[in-house]
Each structure stands twice: as C-alpha cells, then as structure tokens.
Image (tube, rainbow, N blue to C red):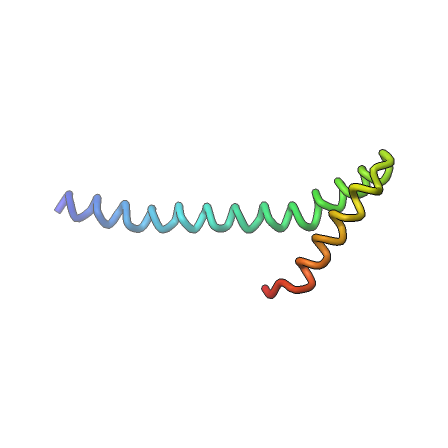
Length: 69
C-alpha cells in the first residue's frame, strides 16, 4: 500500500512540476517580448545604436508576422 501511495504521489506531483515549468517558460516568453525587448531597443536607440536596433526590430517583426500562435 505504501509503494502504491508513493508511485501515485510522484505521478501527480511530477505532472504538477512539469506544468509549473511550462507555465514559467510561457510567462518568461511574454515578459521578454512585451517588456524587455522594447526596453532594450529603446535603450539602444538612446545610446546611438540605431544601426543595431533597426535590424533586430525588422527580424523580430518579420518572425512575428509569419509565425502562427
């Protein structure tokens, strides 16, 4: 009975840990695309790195244009 308990215990909490990792990865992607990338690009423009920021903006824009959710 104890062995069955531990097997089911690890199955359930293993799935929960997997779900937590997937959720964390999704939240980090949203934070990167909505918060950090625009801040990095604006910072590059203010530092005079428009020649680097513009190609990054174009590549990200084209990827987001052709990518399906």
